[in-house]
Amino acid sequence: MKKILVTGADGFIGSHLVEILLKKKYDVRALVFYNSQNNWGWLEENNSNKKLKVISGDVRDPHQCKEITQGIDCVINLAALIAIPYSYKAPSSYISTNVMGTLNLCKASIENNVKRFIQISTSEVYGTAKYVPIDEKHPLKAQSPYSASKISSDAIAYSFYSSFNLNLSIARPFNTFGPRQSARAIIPTIITQALSNKKKIYLGDLSPTRDFTYVEDTCEGIIEIMNSKKTIGKTVNIGSNTEINIKSLVKLIKSYTKKDFKVIEQIKRKRPKKSEVFRLRCDNTLLKRLTNYKSKLDFKQGLKKTIDWFQIKENLKKYKSDIYNI
Image (cartoon, rainbow, N blue to C red; front, side):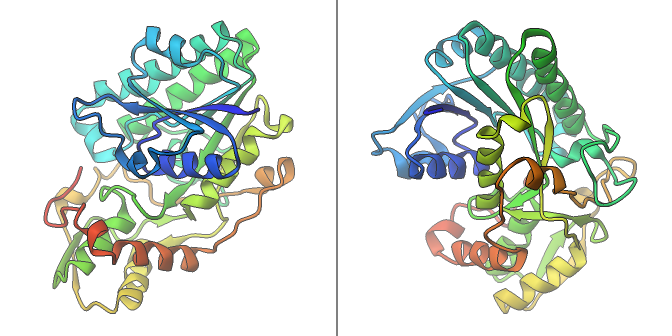
């Protein structure tokens, strides 16, 4: 496979994935969300690469999905609304983008004889762990409108494998982190407030645990899944099989940034009690068995690289640490 369509390419994981694919000499067609400023988001720095073609558009439009999948070997679908707090405010938009967008891309891929389709899922679909580590057989539980939309979009994608022989794999990353991540995620939330010299930083619940994977490792996992015939028709977790609670994460970031601050748990930053996912830890056995995946950075190494990126003034300026980003 040489020609790859990456949707959601202007976002956090998407932009990193595009960069890695280009380094591996793939031809990349990148779909970014249309805006009147013709802004490519995090892809702006790659606008001179001859193997990259950027298209502005929207996966909610079936006609455009048919057009952009023409001549493509593999679709990697990262286009999604992902902020959990915002899904409480605007749940319908999550259905139209995450579910209908996936449907449009799958249908277009069948019509254009696309060889491979990689649906990007999320560990949020598992809900709070019933057992750890969480393997791909773990029950699914929709604890937020976001997770409900991703369960639905994964199911739509899988139905095209079952019904229309679409060569589908569902890649299910656990919590990805790294440079460029939105401040709605916990690690950038802590780092941006700390580096802005806040004496008090505001967070939600400190008790949940997460399995964090550095963004480049997540991207390598996606590419490995794409290149393995053994993953066709399967859901494959991407994670580290480790976990850390938010309270311990705060202490680690405080140590690495050498910043002194007090943590305030803020009610508006907490999920509704029945919606909080309290524990996530990945079983990555299947990923390692079906692919050649190997992690390049452990959590602490990735965290240090992430902090180094945020410490660059031009990067930190892009974040509004005084505003709670839902």
